[in-house]
Structure formats: structure tokens, C-alpha cells
Length: 178
Image 1 (spheres, rainbow, N blue to C red):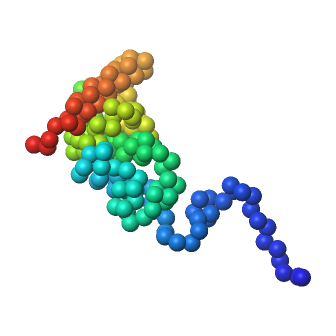
Image 2: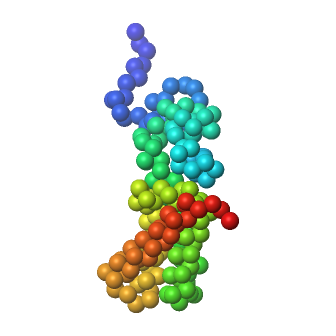
């Protein structure tokens, strides 16, 4: 027997895509989150379940659970997806004084949740985390520190501004669109 032997990789060493059995192609995480946001926009958070999302994507719940172990993990990603609509590009703040820059980031954050009123209700139970949430916080801190606030005061002020925006966004979530 002179055939070369292919060693079997240790369990857990393969990427999830390599461990998959043949079948449906994997669904990109962004597509899953976008579909979840669409379901929430159209029917509210109660309309979103792993089953309804799988049906919407013509997939299985097992495929979704590979990316999101819980509905809460999916909800956090949806919040972060909404925050991705906020303009945090430093070039768009470069020539603004700190107050107009602060107003721009606050208004942008509020408008993102106004466009997705039902997703705003997720903020009552889930703190914004993820790369987009971090980018909004970092831009807010940069704006406040450019305005002369110390890092400590900017952090407290940024948190206060964020809580005000999120509070108003949560209130909007229960109101019908005008």
C-alpha cells in the first residue's frame, strides 16, 4: 500500500465552512442581518424568529445558528447594522466646529433609528456593541475632545448624549410612521 496518507486534521481545527456537509451554500452574515432588519422593519421584533428568518432566506435555522447562537446575538448585530448607517467619516467632520459636529453625529444616529423604528425598540434590552457602535462612540468622543473637553469629560458627555438619543429612539419605536 504505497498511497499517500492524508492526515486527518484535529477536531475543531477546520473553519466552519470546511466542516459543512455538502448542500446549500453558506449565507453571508451581512445578508442574514439585512434580512432580519427587513423583517423587524415590516413586522416588529415579534415577527423575527430564527424560523421566520430562515424561511425569508430560503434556508434552515441550523444555517442561522452557525452565525448567531441566540436571537439576542442576532438582535445585537441588527442594532450594529443600523448604526452602520451613521456617517462617521472623519473627512465629513473636518471643517465643522465641535457643536455642529456633535449635532451631526447625534442627528445621524437618531435618523438611523427613525428609519428603523422597530429596531430602535431593541435598544431597551440590548446595549449597542460591535464595530459600528464603536465607530459612532469614537467619532462622538473625537468631536467632543476636539471641542476642548478632557477625555474623561468627553466620555461622560458622550455617554449622556448617546443615552438621550437612544431614549428618544426607543420612544419612536412605539409610534406609527408619519
